[in-house]
Length: 107
Image (cartoon, rainbow, N blue to C red; front, side):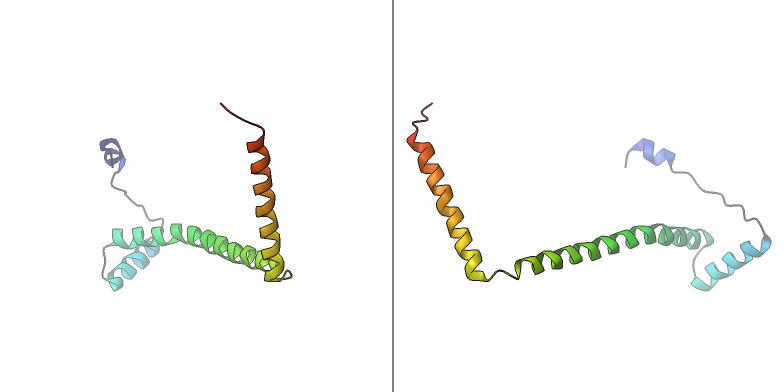
């Protein structure tokens, strides 16, 4: 963290709109055994990271769905057919490499 970033961090002063709000938060902090600052900061952090957690959970679910969908696409082709197609592709690439080498591409 740079010196300018440290300088930007300042103490936060909260003003509670009603005494009831202050009393509720003060009571909850006391019950949790932490200061009001710790209580408010942890609640704010949990709320802020909840949005990120929801996004990441949705991304994981989408990834799993996509992985399963593509796995299903490959299931209709037996392994022997896939292997034969891979061998044919390798042979074709080898033929193309030999043809290119036969053209005398000297530098």
